[in-house]
Image (tube, rainbow, N blue to C red; front, side, top):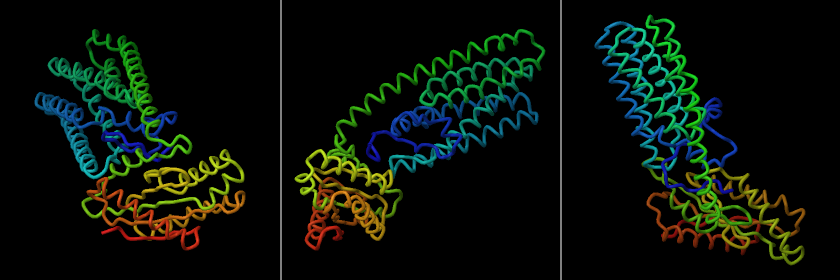
Length: 386
């Protein structure tokens, strides 16, 4: 598997908090599919604005009709959580201007839950107030929000069901504490409503997952080297050209062009099956050595290319030597096996196009030739061509 497969969509990193990981992730699915499901309509800005404005309007109506502490508290909590949601989405938009993936999934989803709980408690407050106008306005509004949640958040079924319960359960719990007997119908409806939402969420989730997996496997076949499951050339170029810096300042990148020493002798001595196994072992070493957002590719034969975003020259030298040492560790089984590396550092990746990238590759190839000429099993470094 490559460390990344490019998807032309604004995405969020998978959550870091343990509870959010359980709530939002399905470890049986590839990471990129989890990201696509996580980054669905439920946390996109248009949906956020719709829910935010609707809930704020409802709290203002409630406060206007009942200028009491509980209604004031409902308004203030809704205002705080709504403002925080807007700020988080603004931060995500800023991150998307410079990189493809935003990092705020934990905070955004937690705030959505807090907003849902506040909205649900406010609906219960409207029921308990005995105000027929608020009851008519708030209860259908909450049901619409819960139904929309089932549709928009179906990519994360556990989260969607929790959000629905936070919206709907307070209303059901408030029924015994108000005088109107006909509202007990809400309690009779509750299991059927929740079951319908559960079935709807899982049906939509299954359809979306199946479609995304089909797309994923098609793209995977087109972008991966079938032997090592690293990116192929076309996949690597797409990934490399999709990189954007993490800010407005210079964004450094290092390029490593590697070639196995003594690989032809292994093929001649042990056969091509063993040679293929060696290539797979080297690919595995690269996965273990580099970060998940580094871009690794088998370039052809026994050549590999690695792009290291956001790394300084000294770190790229350390990285190259670490990989050389790792490959040397398997040379005990295959005498003569080693790795030579050509390194080129790019001080600012911003604005890189295909022509510049190919120029960097050519320079890294020249550095690789120097490493082999000076004794193999080492790295040489050249500057970016003028």
